[in-house]
Structures are given as C-alpha cells and as structure tokens.
Length: 372
Image (cartoon, rainbow, N blue to C red; front, side, top):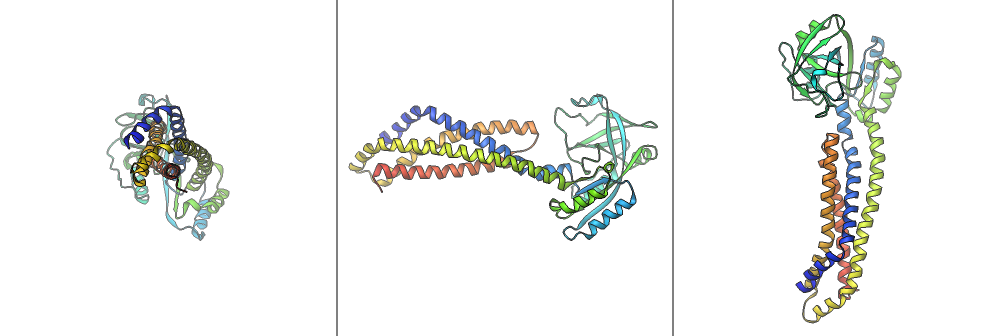
C-alpha cells in the first residue's frame, strides 16, 4: 500500500510542482481579494459608528430650526428618541509643532469640550469611562489617530489661544474615539469644567445639537427631511449618511471580490479535479493488482483519500500562508483589525475546497475500482 500510495505521492508532488504553484498563487489571490473586499463590508458599521457616535449632530444656527427638527423626530413613527443634548463647545487654535506630527506642523484648530458634557455624552453612549480632570489636565479625542503619523499627545503641553486669551493644557491621555460626530468639529480636547468656564466668555462658542434615535441605519427619510431645514453652515452630520455611503462602496467591492473569488476558486478546483482524474486512469492497473492480491476496497479508498488529500492540502496551506501575510500588511496599513472577516473568508473558501476534494476522491475511487 505504501509503495502505491506514498511513493507515488512523492513522485507526483515533484512532477506537479508547477501546477501546485499556480494553484497556490490562485488561492492566495482569491483569499486576498475576497478577504479585503469583505473586510470593508464587515467593518462598515463599526467605521460609521466611529465617525458618528450620535445619530445626528449639527451646529445650532437658530432656535426655530431646532424646534422644527425636534417636532420631526417626535412625530417619526419609525424612530424613537433615545437622547437629545445641547452641548456648548469652543473653537481655539494651538501650536502643535512640538507634538511630532507628520501631517501637522504649525497651528491646528481644536474643538474644546467640558469634562461635564463629555461624561454626560459618554453615559448616553454607554461608554464605561468617566473623566476627572484637575488643573490644566486635558484629554484628546482623535478617532482618526494613526500611530507614527498623528501627533504624539500624551505627556505634551500645548497653548490654546485666540485673539484675546491663552491657556496651557497638558495631555493626560488620548482616546481613539470621540463622543461628537466628526464633520461639525475638529479634533476634540476635553478640559476641566473650571478651565472651560474660564475660556468660554472670550472664545468662539458654538452649541451642538446632538440626537440619538432607534433604527438609525434606516433613517433615510428623516435624515433627508432634516437636511432640508438646516443651512450649510450648520455642518449637519448623520450616522445614516456615512453608513449608507459605506454600504454602497463596500457592496460594489464585495461583488467584484466575490466574483473574482468564485472564478479563481472554480479554476483551482477544476485544475486539481481533472489533473487527478487523468492520473487515476494511469493508476488503474496498479490498484487492480492490489485488489487481486487481497486489498479490500475500503483500504484502497483510504489510500486514494490520502494521496488526493496531499495534492489538495499543500497549495491550500501555501495560499493561506501568503494571504495571511498580505492581509496582515493591509491591516497594519489601515490600522484596523481584519482578523474576523479574514477568518470567515478562509473558512468559507476551505469548506468549498473540501467539497471539491470529496468529489475528486469519489471520482478517483470509481475509476480505479471500476465502480459505475
């Protein structure tokens, strides 16, 4: 049995090295294309929530518009209001040349938020974090932070300033999220209530109207109605807009990646399938001799499964290894965790690959044993 199975196996691996290499490359290409496209689709909601932790947010320009929007939300049959906050924020500049940033060198605009309002919004958003700041301590909220590229905040001191005042703050911590939607604000700095109260009378001040509703991913009509009411300078942002645009973009990518994946998968499976059936015809005489000297069909099937299994497994393992390296590099580049979507893609690909393997083993066995 080993003479037929193992020795033939080693011979075939050497003889089919070029074919197995092509299959490994196709497998790696398939998994990388599908894994990349699916990861964007899978992480779309997470990215939308990171950019827009609140369902809707805008800068208040007049009380009449706010009242109209309150009425729209209250009358909406498909959505219930979870919370509505009116939050004052300040706009101030600071010299960030000492923060060792690749993108920023010179002055940078910041949005200043009070400790009290941060804690209130964090509680509304079910975040398990409360701030307790003393003196000139501050915390920066930067959801687009990129290691090695963004400013190095922690432990550094900057001077917030406008035309009438200056205030030094020292960054106690940095969080890779925000409690405010990204579009209406700059990178956010949370300061103590004492410092905020000191700066507010002379600084540029805005009031942010913040809403959270149920079913925010389906708020197309409500979002459109609110956009009609607000002027451009309100800088309206919504979870639905970001989420729906992400779904459109990732939907197209996953279609393209899935289509290419199916084509390559069919190609790899078919190459091995027909290659093995060709070799089965040449092995028919050897297995016939084994059967005549007393080897039963169960043992023959076991040998066939082992022989075909190696031919299928080697390029699959090589392809997965190459794909893992490629997607790890992509994950580091995008600063996001792609493990779950990639593992899902690999699992689905392997399952389909196993189906090809079972079909090949059955066809190989029928040929070498003359089973109709």
